[in-house]
Image 1 (tube, rainbow, N blue to C red):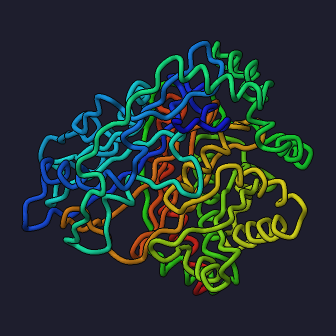
Image 2 (cartoon, one colour):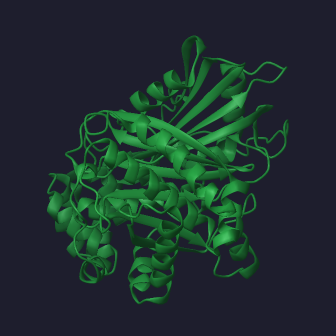
Length: 478
């Protein structure tokens, strides 16, 4: 019997449209090794390791009449070269050209008739570099056992070989229409209410689908709505277009640790204060009215290790977890960023106070229930944050900020050492900006995914993140 998509996972297929493609991505930049590193090497490595992620050879199959949710089936015509692609920048390619390519690739929906992922090798970068861009649909990020393609191609050892456990993989026979109908009938007997819901969702009844997801969330939506007022209006909640812009910023993890130590906060608090400071200057650069009481609301998924106090303490100190660990609990908070506060020290203290207030209040209970719907694995927290965002959109928050702890040791792919890694978090409906943050090997990387029409100046905001980091560092010696 094929695996059936969960109600939440299926909702991402039903609600996806050309303005809000629901895939998450990443950009990893490598130093090309002395030994050759080209498309054929990458293709061979992915081929040998793909058996570790069986879902990446499966596609979504609809049930006739939409009598049940779709199922995962082996792709009978699986073509690895379709999913692992090659691109190149005109030499010597610079970072701005790479970011333009990322924006174009992330603007395109994945093909629902094939396995829902793509990987691009980008050649032609200056300074003897190459990049790998990944796209994975949120429907594939389906729980604590989910494995991201990056976990397969990236390794802590330079040249470790992993044999494909399915080296002689053959697709399982595709279920017949009769089999799908019989299984749908069985489900209908056990859960009769889902038949009507599935049919309504199949004809793009968005309101029915949202209601379905809300029920799957166990009533969390009403709990959250009762706990907060609507988010402030502003330029971050414009109608979403079909195209994106992408920009990046970087910081040293030790610098953020020093700020954390000086002010008794967490690294995550420092990151949020940096984002708040950058957004403040960005609003002022646009001529927006900013008063001392001006705020912007961020939805902030935070990972913790409730079953391991030592690992949890490490996260609070370094914003990272050891390679291969998996958090067992996720909390997502709605935080009012004090963009009206001009003093960086006061801004950080206000953010820290808001985060502590969430932990100590009853509101965190509803937030915990919200994100526990799909479980958690470290490489998929960005996707988890996007899943949360897509359920509530601009009614409750202005910007999504996901801060994912990453490995603090070098990673490799086919012998090439990874120098940088930037997350690409998708936009929810009527959202103009999402900020993904990842720590890796002593650095912190900010990936800004923005609507092309609403935020032509996202590069300005990225530069202001660097300025806000410097401003925050200045408070350590003050």
